[in-house]
Length: 308
Image (cartoon, rainbow, N blue to C red; front, side, top):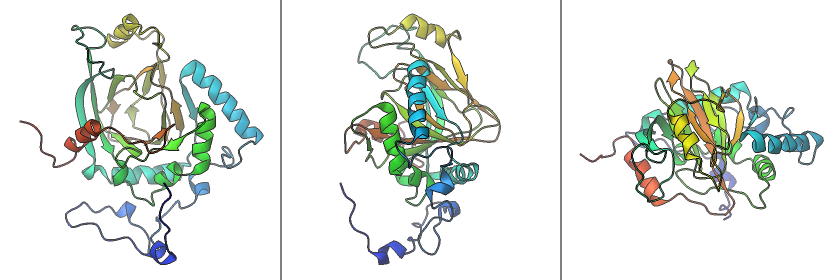
């Protein structure tokens, strides 16, 4: 759907003051002209000399696409290192961390799979739970003039990712909650072993922790025809044969196929947080996430009432 036209008067109007009682966020305050205080242009955010996504069909982009497709097929993870400039990554991380007072706090024991409705016996790979603990900043909590949103909405990035995945159609999600999000993990926080419900995840690392917070994964441990429960269960008990571990660096843009690849983020150690932005796309237009999941997010918001 096209956005309504914006008059020049509206475009220059300073943003409204935050509602009374909400945490004030100076890092997200726009300037007098209603624009972000820094990193207003894509060349300030992305290293376009290294990654000229605005030049589709160029030898450099064609080479990146070939490399990415081959890497995803073998490894399930393709990283464009230092895609975002260090100063821009630090700015975006500070924006996100300033939103923590309003963020969801996820803290739950979860199975690694999306439920299939069956009653699996204790000890089976489908019944073993894993701790997930982190903050999640939602789409509607991220300013429209944030450089992170500017990056997400940049058309050459969407088109590059579409071509990389070989999709005929590829749309940004329209979900007001989860189209663009960020995960923040502090000391002891982790994202437990799991498979993704969607076939690919796109993320950008904005800040690295002092220790821990490594991305650990077993590429293609299962297939559509073979769940390979024995190997998955072995991974849960500490077997590490075939596991890969990546310390994803600030500024890296990552493409990950997690539907067949078991993965987790190991516990963060130290006072410096791990901050990652997540971009949601879909091959169908108008995508929103299901109300049960959104309702779960609402229960994790600060001040939400909880059972018991």
